[in-house]
Image (cartoon, rainbow, N blue to C red; front, side, top):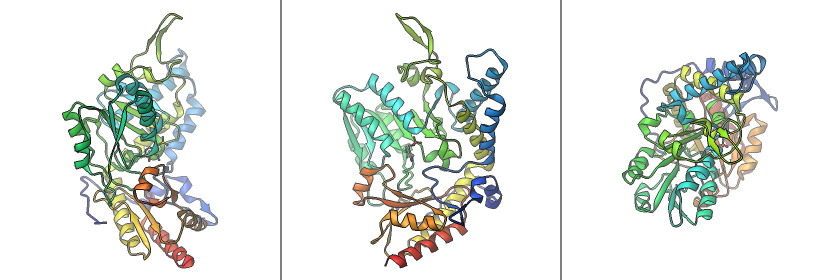
Length: 417
Ligand code: PMP
């Protein structure tokens, strides 16, 4: 991989030791060894402020939102809606009506597939995804295409793990009704040129959904600048809790979409003859939301902004380049995903060692990496491999941890050979 230096404006080096103090779990010993957590692409650890926000909600704010006139309900409603506003500002949405709380990226994409898709996709229409999608951004579209007799088209990936955009430009036609692509690949770390994809799709008035499950924690996202039509992410990859995520959608599109789930909170008036629906964003938030989760996510957003997204990107890029330089020197090891634009994710395979054996050995040393297909089986087929080992770095990882990981990796390779 070419270790190109990404220039990050307004980035300041921070004291990573101080940041680590904010994450209680990082003090844990695993099998008697200090935890070296390099599985951040699967989920990130949580700072104390996020844990406190959730605790505080249940200790002193807990009540259902939107429906009560009593004090606690007003307090919890305000905390919940404040979290929505924080997220709106975090991704620079035009309105808080455009921020829909979901369980995560998967539910957000399914919401668009079921609601937008069922209304707008017809027989012989085409939906474009890419070869590097997570199953969450494949299966909902497959289900939709099967139901509607529409076609799924796939942007190919080159040997470096980059999208072949010239092919995308050939795939897109007047039959294309939606483009849904991953912003940053969880398996390869590739940062896709989503601005080019959006510009091309918009020339033909085709909406674009960005799966930003990974991108949300690695790069500053401005939905108005990007001009994406939908964007999905999960709280747990952004130092927030599990079970909460966000669908951003342009107000006009969301307004025209039918509800996804029916039930409490999403209605204006219900009679047996007819139901009218609530306004945005509540139309898409049927039932009691994950209130504590949303508040926890709001705290995570505050925390990330306090550290500074540019500083986090700068730190992660320096870890990526440091680790890449060391890992590529290891004989018998091949990095899968050598794109020019990458975030702090390194996937690799090692001759004659199954990733699961490697992951198990590293675990004995307290080192947590992920092994498997990373919910991207078509991508694994593209590279003719069943699985990879993946190390992924977050704001709290250190070069010392990378040294430890590389040294353990060399030991396991030596022992297996
Ligand atoms: N897309 C990508 C790129 C991901 O990395 C993930 C999580 N691994 C998902 C979608 C699904 O996210 P979740 O399981 O939080 O819904």
